[in-house]
Amino acid sequence: MQSLTALQAGLKRCTSCSNMQKLTDNDDCARCGARVDSRRTNSIMRTWVFLFVGIVAYFPANLLPILYTESFVGNTNDTIISGVLSLISAGSVAVAFIVFFASIVIPVVKFIAIAGLVLSLQYSSNMSEHSKHRLHALTELIGRWSMIDVFVVAVLVALIQLGAIITVTPGMGINAFAVSVIFTMLAASSLDPRLLWDKDNTVDNVESFDGAAETH
Amino acid sequence: MADIFVVGVVVSLVKISSLANLEVGVAFWALLGLIGVSLFLDYVLCKDTIWDRLTCRV
Ligand SMILES: [Zn+2]
Image (cartoon, rainbow over all chains, first blue to last red; front, side, top):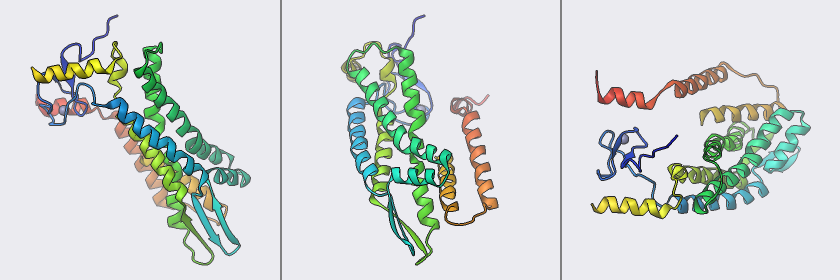
């Protein structure tokens, strides 16, 4: 079985409406007007930058408190992990597991998956096409789930405002966490999956091909 | 993102239920229904078909 990419066929596909047009056509989609690139420019560099910010923000996200609780029995600070522990001690093990998975495991898995995909593009890897596809599908699928903790803090802060009895305010940790999740999602979306299927993995070839098509 | 929001709401309700008694209202179930419907819509809607219908009206 021989695979054929649009690039090899001299075509480019609009990611917004799937319309095909010739590489030599202009960069606006003839059908929907969106910008059409054969391969996204600087995809690898952008992915690295977004991923770097995501990883850096992950540390304050886990170390700083995400929630301040002021009540008549005293004040407490909750970090992500202490929130999980208090859910366990309250007996909600299933919910604690969901929060632990979404806030701590998924971000790390996603950092590794994205870095693995980009490294497989930059260095000739012997990863099979199918495992690249599965790794890419994983990054698309799990990324959003880490937002759970951000929503939990938003709902708690909105609901628990009982003045002197109990008041909940967000901590800096949750801001760092949101930054980490959003930038990791940006990293995943700026990685052009079409690069993964180019047989000749060197991106420069693709970009010089693009340039050549434009000068014609 | 709405499906994740509803999981966030459930986690918050579990956290609050350790502080106070609470009962979920009709709107919570309505929200669940809305999210179920919109997930089903994402699943069945084929963007390519829509674009094809829009361009060549047969
Ligand atoms: Zn288009």
